[in-house]
Structure formats: C-alpha cells, structure tokens
Amino acid sequence: MCLSGGTGSGGEFGGQARSGSKAGHWSDEEVRMRIEKDQFVGGLPARDVRGFMRSAAGKIIRTRTVAQQFGLSSKKAEHFLNELENQGLISPKEDYWEATAKGYAFAMATAAKPLRKSTAEQLVGETIGRAELVNADYQVGLPCSATGPFSEAS
Image (cartoon, rainbow, N blue to C red):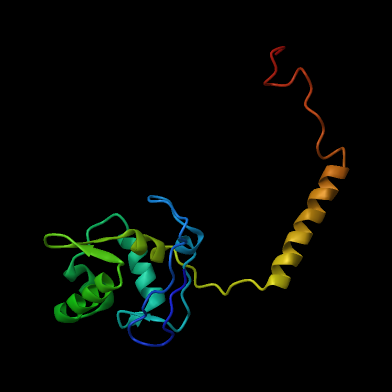
C-alpha cells in the first residue's frame, strides 16, 4: 500500500487488501506502505508524522503530547489528531488515542525510492554469483567432523 496525495495537506491513504487475505493476516499490499519526500499527512510533513508514530507505538496519544512534539496549539493538535483518526491511523479512546494497525504500518513506512527492475535483477544476479563462488570453494565450507562440539562423540 502506498500513500497517495503528493504535496496536498491531507495525504489520503490508498490501496486495498487482496481479496484472498484472511482476517488477522497482512496481505502484501497492506505491508508495503511508502511515503513520498514531499508528502503531507494531516497538514504536517509525512516523514515527521512517521517519526511521531514510531515514538508513539504502543503508547497512549494525547493532544498535549502532539502539541509539544510539533509546536502546535491545542486546537491545531486536536485537528491534527482528528485528521489521523479520519485516515485510520489512530482510534479514539475515552480521553486519548491509540495507534491502529494501519498506524503501525505507517510508522514502518519507507521513504526510499523503489528499486528499478534492472537494479533488482543485477543485485540478485550478484548475490547468486557470490553464492556459487562460496559453494565452489571447498575450503570455505568444510564439512563438520564427527568429533565436533555438537557430536555425540565429544
């Protein structure tokens, strides 16, 4: 799943789970979340929001914490939290919010550019080549002796 929206202030989330995904299991699309360097979420830079979500993982989220973290007024912090709630990143409790599964996925989102197919193929080819060299060199992978530290004879 990728975030869409570019430089807009909302930063809506896109993507659908595969129809074959089972309850309690992440599909590939749900796990793959990517943010753009110029993306905004709730009116703030997505990278900053991602950092906040990482630090807030497993903790309660209060308006005053957000206000302090981002230097916002209480009113703006409340608006920001409502935006995160509308996007499904956090869920409200009695007097605080908690990160949702989507919020945890956003906290782990990458801002790296995706690999090109040609680069990925080159990297895989190089890895296979190194594995073939190691497998061909008998001195690198000597067989274990029967008197090694984990054998019954020792």
